Image 1 (cartoon, rainbow, N blue to C red):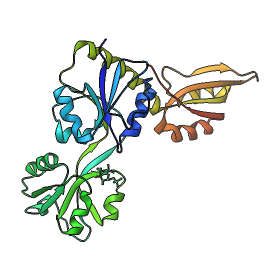
Image 2: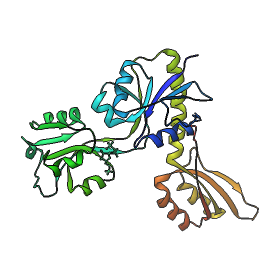
Image 3: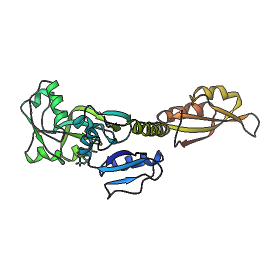
Image 4: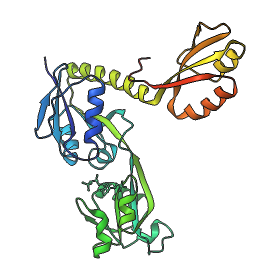
Length: 285
Ligand code: PRP
């Protein structure tokens, strides 16, 4: 039986979360940080540890079948490659930044300026769309230093927390795109491998849904039960079980983790007690 070859970033910001999601979907891999590839023990999968920038080409050539990669890299180097799932981690944005001291009124201010970047295609597209002509200087790594050493007037790079821009006295002036880790698919995939991929996608969806949700348990006075149920959406409807004490019920439900604090206030106002909120590992709908 053939194995699905999954590329992950060898080192860098995506590596840890990529390995975590593989583990969470039940694919156990011996720690392979110093290896080029490793086989999963319990699933027809091989993991290839590759340099981020090389992955789009490997996907195009079918050297690997799928990859966990930043959408930003895909947009820069592999625009036509299909995205099977957005994975919700490693969020960042590709931005243009200029020195804090530079006055900036809009993209036209970049006309004739030198922009240092590791994202030449992305930034060139953006400049073309805005009818601006600048000179691009392609640099791999430490792009933010370029204005400080007189190499460029502006930069285009990924920004996550913004601390690298801050440390280099730069300010963000244009957001070109927003990005997160995605599961990308080679255009040349056999039917047999598509079948493995669809199993993986099913598992990923369950894990991501679980990460988005919390399991909530609480005790409710029976005369307030309906009000409490009304603020709990649940997967279908909340589970209600009688407590040993007369007049009280235990209510179980699932809520979106972002709604948690809003819902909690409403529940307390309606007389809920002993509220427990637990993480959910996987959620199969
Ligand atoms: C990226 C990018 C910036 C930094 C931005 O580098 O090139 O330097 O992260 O992140 P921040 O907004 O949280 O400071 P990364 O650390 O991924 O390594 P790289 O230099 O190899 O690209």
